[in-house]
Each structure stands twice: as structure tokens, then as C-alpha cells.
Length: 120
Image (cartoon, rainbow, N blue to C red; front, side):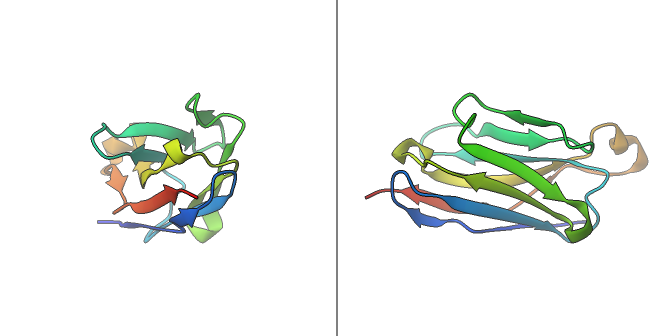
């Protein structure tokens, strides 16, 4: 089964920036890619998604500050996070959703998560 590996998390100051990366062990062309996050004591929530064709969708909390992108050639997805706030502190998870390609045997994938801490 394919695997997702995230990187790029760490400590950032309020107002700072971080870029998260997610690399898949196989081609991502058949997947919509997404980023989710989970803060302590809360449920996992959607941050941003990018479809196979490149259409993007953002949570209200991410609009105007975060940018999701993908590079199919590198089998990777990215989340550029600017103007970070303490409330952005969470474990960020990469997701690969095969959508209708489940009919061809593709399965949904999750990464192991990368911790983002926003604090002064």
C-alpha cells in the first residue's frame, strides 16, 4: 500500500510562515490531496484540499493565509502557511483521497502527521 510522509512542521512565531510537504510512495495523479489538522482535545478538521485537476478548497480559518499545491511529477503536495496564529497549533495530516478511483482498487491514505506549534 502506498504511504504518505509529511515533513516541515516545527515551531513558528505568530505571524511567521511554514511550508509542509507530503510525499507519496506512488503516483498521486489518481488522488485528491488534502491537509487536515487536529489540535489537542479536538476532532480532526479539514484545512485545505486540491483536486486531481488542481481546484482548491479551504477552511474559512485558512482562507487568505494558507495555500495548498501539488506537484504530480514529484508525487508531492504542499501547504504553505503564512501569518500563522497560535490557534493554528496542531498536528497536520496529509490525506490522499482516491474518490471514484476506489472502484479501481485505490484506497484512502493518511500520513503520520507533523506537529506545528505557533508560539512566541
